[in-house]
Image (tube, rainbow, N blue to C red; front, top):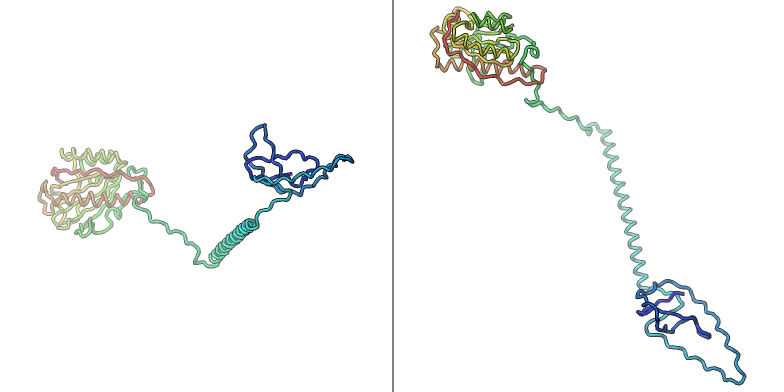
Length: 359
């Protein structure tokens, strides 16, 4: 049997005495001498109807004794009650709980339906998009266009050695036309005559020719030109040596040989009005890039000696050696090969300030 108490004291039911009604218990428990009662009420649980036990039969009364007086029914205690009937929540609370439960249930149902509908719409949209791409060729993505290689990504030819740059020079490569233009808007140099030879001695004499032959020069490509103002004649070209180190040895030895007049570069005559190229004193300049030696010889067209501080001569040497031969012809060869190793920066231009007599 389970009781519910609303007072701060625990209920206690002793064994019923004879003649007591067990369907309702009103007696207050006697004072307890044991441990302190629990302050937590017994949980309320549903209970079934209590079965009333039959009252014990009273002892046989004496024929002469009066009947015993009826025991007064005690009043219910003010602190609580006990009943054999199951307890029920109030109707209003049950209604609220039921309504909340139904509301949550509907929220779950509607939320799940909305999620399913969203998934269905996404699936239909994706299927339609794939179907359109499959049927419409214009929707298919086009392959990305290949990006143009930057100048730094251009493959370069190693021209530091004849082993990696074995193709010989040609006249068309070095002097492709009848004019040489060194800049936008600049007046061109007129090409009078060109020559390509496997013997470097045709372009030099004395110790200079011997030096080129000894260090493995196997080709020279040169041309005779007239300056834009017509006052100067020049012969310029490229010597093909074995490697960069050999070309640098020639460069370093040339100044001493020309200063001591132990040899010279030969001018290339190109007609009756170009005799100064072989007879007049000349100014010469040279420069190394890779395994090539670029050079230029300048004379006055009237055969007069060239002044050491003549700015026109210095400009001609720079135009032909630095701009045309080094940054033009050799740079195109360095960037037009299949090797990926870049060439080194060309060394500074050397100039022979001494006058030399040509053959």
